[in-house]
Structure formats: structure tokens, C-alpha cells
Image (cartoon, rainbow, N blue to C red; front, side, top):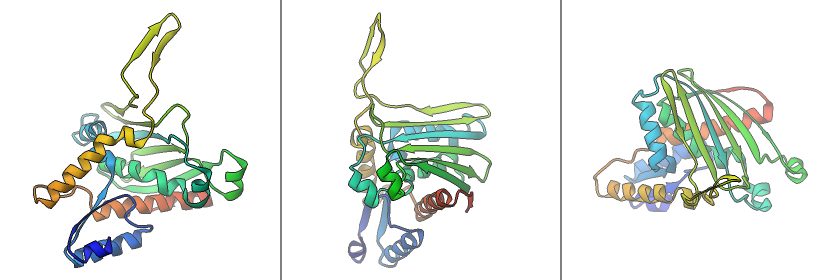
Amino acid sequence: MREAAEYGLYIFTEKPVEETADKIKDLYEFCNKHGAKLCCGFQRRFDLTYKAVADAVRANKIGKPLSASIFFADHPCPPIEFLLTGGDIFMDLSAHDVDYIRYALNDDVESVYATGSSSTEELKTAGVYDNATMVLTFKEGTIVTLTMSRSASYGYDQRCEIFGTEGLVCVNNEHADSSIISSVGGVQLSRLKHSFPERFDAAFAKELDVFADCILGKVDWPIFEKDCIATQKIADAARKSAQTNQVVNL
């Protein structure tokens, strides 16, 4: 990215921009110095359903947000080699949902508490969580619970509910197809979509469309340096909280 920045180019990258908040800040400063535009992609902002839910919250359609519950279960489970060497669950899984809920609530996180567990002895011995929960307290008082798992046997499970004084708004799962089989044995739906390329294919395409429009000067990129830094600091706080079993204030 630095090589491209030296030519003053527009640069698109999926999260993470860098490994730490300080490195993210340094990279943005480097890009700004050379007149380059760094565009970080958080795909939930470009997904039609997630965007509709965020728009409803920001338009005050559910009143004051009181709480939110987010569930992220990956599918298929990554190889054990990945989990053991580079699969920190807070760094790898939380970023998209953390950015999304900050955007939807139009608010910043005040404190983080996190805990996790390991489903196998091998992961436990290595000190690697493959299941974890984060509790985020926002400055305006909203309490957000983010539960994450490395593996859902039934498909890619992505849900979000935001509850307010005047209503509730939800992101529900998407299925592989819309077929419904009803019989004396019950009602059967298809499996959930296989993984993130299938679930967020349209969002990834929309990201690239918006990126192209940025290059053409039609729009501004909607995700800023402050968003990337805030998301990284929250992930860092979650890892620290899980290690110390204490609330981490930001």
C-alpha cells in the first residue's frame, strides 16, 4: 500500500488496514502526505439489509437505542493451523460488526468487557479462543453484546437485533435458496448460505462500485481513518479484557 501511495493513487483494502491503531494512523498519514486516498472496506455498510437497519436506527425509527445483540458464527471452520498461528478471534472476527454497530448507533464505545472459551484441548493448551463474547457499553448508554464462534455446523450465521424505546429492527440470516418444504413432519428451510463470499457477494461488488465512483470524483469514501482506529482499539481492548478478566475503558 505504501508503494501505491507514493504514486498518489486511490487504494482499496479490506480490513484490517494495519495491525495496531498506531500503525493505522501512521499509514493514513503516509497516504495523506503523498496525496493518496486510502479506502478501507467494511462490507456490512454496503449490504442492503445491514444498511436498511442502520438507516432505520439513525432515522430514529426505533427511538433511543437501548441494547443490541449481534451473533457471528463462521462457516466452515478455519483449519486448526490458522487458528493456532494467526486466528485471534477478537482481531479476526469482531471488526466488521464493531464498525457496523458504531455506524448504526452513531456513537462511540466507552468500555469493553470480553471473555472466551476453547472448544478443544489443543486450542485451550495454546490459549486460543474459538468462541467469545464482547459486551460494549456506548457513551449514550446502549449496551451491545457481540457473540462470535469459529464454527456453525449449519452454515454462515450472521444476525443483528437493535432494540429501542419505540421498536426493534433486525438483520436476519440469508438461506442458500428460498425454498420451503411443508409436510406432516414440519416446515423445512434450506441451509444458510455457505460462507462470507456467498452471503456478502453483492456487498463486496457494491464496495468496488463505490470505490470506482470515488476515483471518478462522484462520491467520497464513507469510512474514515477515525473509524478504522476506533475499531482496532475496541478489538485490542477486548483481547486485553479477556486476558485480565476486567472491564477496559477507552
